[in-house]
Image (tube, rainbow, N blue to C red; front, side):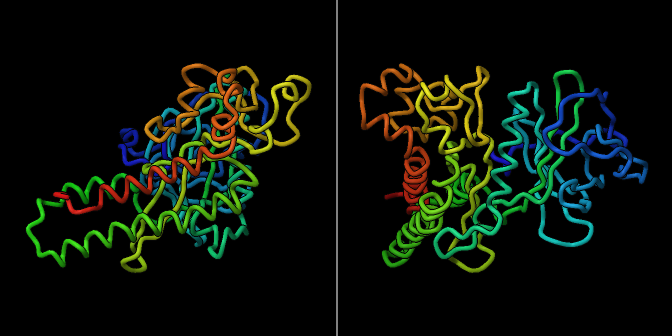
Amino acid sequence: MSVYSGSQASPPIPGGDCAPRPLAPGASYLPYAPAGVGTSPSGAPLPPNAELCEGAVLPIITGGGTCRIKKPLGMGSFGAVWEAEQTGGGPALALKEILCHSHVDLVNAQFEGSLLESFKGKEPGKMDSASILPVLVGSDMSPLSDNLYRVRLAMTRLPGQPLDTFLRIRQEEQLPDQRSAASRIETMNEAFQFAWELLQQLAPAFEEHLAALAYHRDVNAHNILIDFANGPNPKYGLVDFGLAVDVQSWQGELEVQERAQPSRQTRVGQDGATTWHHLDVGGDCRYWPVSAWVQFLLGWTELECNPMLRSEYRTRLDMHSLGLTALQVLVETMPPDL
């Protein structure tokens, strides 16, 4: 589920203020939110265990500032994402609130935050990654009950709208083409340009930067943003690293996992798995390669029998999904009656 989902998030709590939730002690992997430093929309003190709502002001713990919640951007099984602004000025934020129902969920939320932190100052290809990838601004964690934790990740908000939303609106607005041949050729050229820009902008990020750190595992038209603020050529960005895995741990051998803990922080499965053998097959199945379907239906032992499929699943998931997304863009932006 993208942090820039187009689905409607939970409505604000009636009355305008944020409702508190029970707070219980627990293990911390991210800084605790200090009590009483935030404010509700009415100006009342906001406890760290409160539900978010529009107008609330809360600290960006590791960032050292505060932000004001503006509106919901999306929601999913993980929790919700809100648009926020830094009260002292600075880039617009997306604040992702993750509800962790187990220690494993908490570890995975921490890994997502550390990955966003690692994007600072990176430059895949000739492009500034801050314009392609979200960067962590601050984070905090609060225990809500014995087995429930809340993690908040404040990150830079990339401009644009979800690519699948753009494609849907464009198709809805298009009618059977009655224009001249020259206009139809212009539309076709535009479709090729959209697909080419997508590959040109995101492929270097995968090959030169992300490939050394993590696999996204959920590349699709919903988790890619498209923006036209700077002209007719689109600018793309990649969001939602909730299913990402550390490259070294993911590619590791099963025997190594069974002998020792991974040397780097990574996503883990409910059974403690860290390698590709037993971690869940993540992402939108419409963008899966054959190897992901084999893993899903038959398991890792079948992939071990086919070196080409094994290599594809271990190393090329993101590039395969990016290629399918580029093909989707090309097909869905062509003149409708071709």
